[in-house]
Length: 498
Image 1: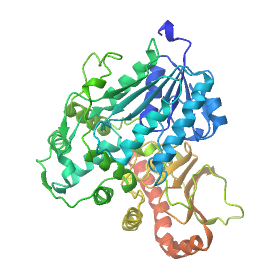
Image 2: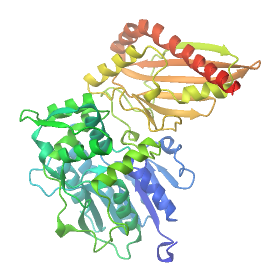
Image 3: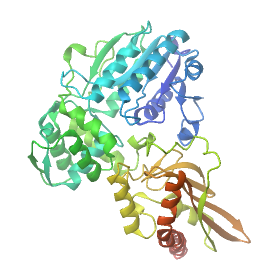
Image 4: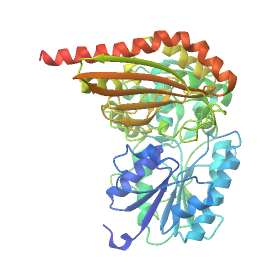
């Protein structure tokens, strides 16, 4: 450990997100003292580092919560955004950043490190403008702010990479908007983390804006061709058309890729302007580049593909909670007063060992599917995407193992106890709140499997929705439970014969 920095305490906000979760891991590997600030502590309990960090639970818009989070902190990493929260996300982000800056000043924080977006083109999007204004608000007090502005981040599990991967895989012939010819300077997530973790060792606080980018400037079309080549695909035919607006492009991406329309739109809007690092804003006189050099676009894509193929994806873009319909509340919110809970209960007692049943349950969703009634699940996912939801394409971080906070298609893991309990919270657009729950127990030497679909309707419309879809439950849920037991039995029998 660097003795000069031994006493420093580092705060990471957004620790349950894509970049934040990896940064915490890297800081701990560097023997740093780390505190994380999260809205729901349960979301990080599945992380390998959750037991070795200080955890402060709270809301970044609450002054008292910020005071607790920032007390004694030397360097605070600001990795928060509200891009999907509302149409006026720019104002929300600015207010949140201003409050964080004021609280940091009051707490005596020495350095704020902020990850923003390259915004050198005057024709910048709302998203990039908001990122730039967030940096300005963070720098509005006496606390020095090191603002690192990145372009497209390429890494296993990133939204940008998933968009690139699925567009290239699924569309050998593409009609695309003109923005695919705009220049961009992608950077590997490995190199973004290099700059962030080295910012923890600064001898003197830095108050400056630095652009960080990879060694190549390419167009988005060139990136797709590089991806196709590395994936063993034929060269993609790209036909540019002038009529695809950002809104239409994001709708198209929302149908073709796992990235929902609401997230695709700011990504697309960011590509309308040229996202190229300004040499005058270089970081390298403050933090040198990695000794082995920055990854090229092809190297970054290859590394991401390898990590994905090996199921070594530490964090994903979907780790952050996805806002659903405006009348839905997050799983941490209190129940509606006097609200009715509707239930579909199924139960099977079997001689199949509990560990075999659990293996099937923990592997549910993603490539494994939902154990029957596939066309009904597909239809429900398609309907969800048509109204702006996440649909089924979000998949899973890991095909075999789950942790709290993981996304599983249009569900999110709310609680998990190995070989006992799995509770999934629905992030599809619904007139209420829904869960799918599995409970396992042993009784008289047998395994009891209980499966419950729970729904808290919002008003009369929610109740009507439940009764309209109830006939489909008679196909979906009994079939699911039977097939889980059948799959576990087959695997158990196969093992006994080897």
